[in-house]
Length: 333
Image (tube, rainbow, N blue to C red):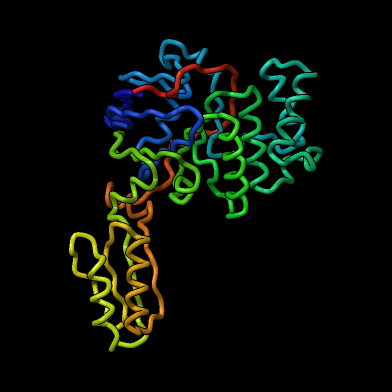
């Protein structure tokens, strides 16, 4: 995706967005509410026409070759697109027939996917009786009926409880392990941290940062060490020990009322080991000591000045398609 633009009247949903996703990985697409995440997914999935720029998926041009793109993608939107009256098996067989697999192959494919997503025991139950996590896994299975090269997941765990989210996370990991490329939009920063190999942060329709979760966190200030001593009399010696390992000779922050000392460090594990040994040798009583790593929440605040949130233009539905891509990137830059 290169320089992609999209307007809604006077509003610029995308303003020259660049994005590249490597094959066989999970690439997170994060941004504040209204940043353009879902608009980008809709364009890549050929559901929306761009006003400018260029985008390719699995080596095919989104604008000039939309049919070929559709044969190679799957899409799972924010809300599970399953028929709650039908059983899990019937839902998948129905999708198979819609994709012209034929009755026999549809039954085979449904059985394969039910097993793959740990839904075989519930295959004969109505989807309406499934838990939220089970419905989302069934929706993911439906999006993979034709084994797509690329799967778009638009906020796949919206509204799920922690157990349901973990179920979906497990399903996504298994997909990537078999070679599927996943572009994931999410409002949950811990979700991106758990699943994504790389993360693109977008704001006002532009990419403002792109890198591994660890690299993005380093932009928020890197690791920090924190020490809490048992007695106020031990504070001076603890401050001296922490100051020795502080990054760029930064003076440690001292919170006397809480007997707590904090400082940024460059090599977190080595610094923690050094301070712990020094304090032990000096006989300083330590109540707590630890390494604090920055979070993606802090990255968001630093980069955008605001938090992430759900977009209003959510995509619902599930589609799938088949084909093999030779290109290493889903969307070329």
